[in-house]
Image (cartoon, rainbow, N blue to C red):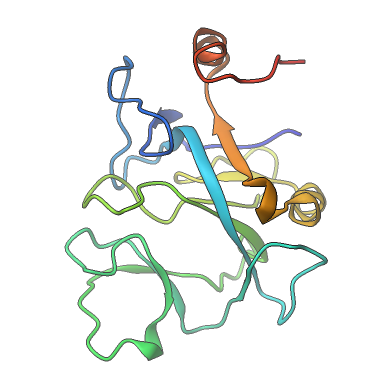
Length: 182
């Protein structure tokens, strides 16, 4: 499936497999890079009260749900209902209801867990604006393809996002036990 990633490409993220030893940029907050590596997919979210058929946990978004991107906040890199926080300590957070519909459907990518301040936050697989527009750090694709994925995901199978440049994929394929590329 065609996807769009960060405007400035990929950088090694904090995921399931160690990437500290690998050459290249490291993901940081605000770099407009999507994280490279292997990451759990933990939850589906969207604008609808109920998810499309899926076995994944689902979060129905509202005007109150935000993604905290302030590295100084104790809520950094969390998707939460701000009305349920008695003492918000963040200076910035991304609203999840957007006019362009990018978050109509999405999947939470467990990047930077547990959160390390400044290592990047609010990483999702979501609906793209269009096939030509890159993201500010997420992975985006056509709505119908994303809904296919949401229907297919099964938490009992421990779904992952493996996101790497092809050359790095080939180098790490044996070490990380990755399937052959088509």
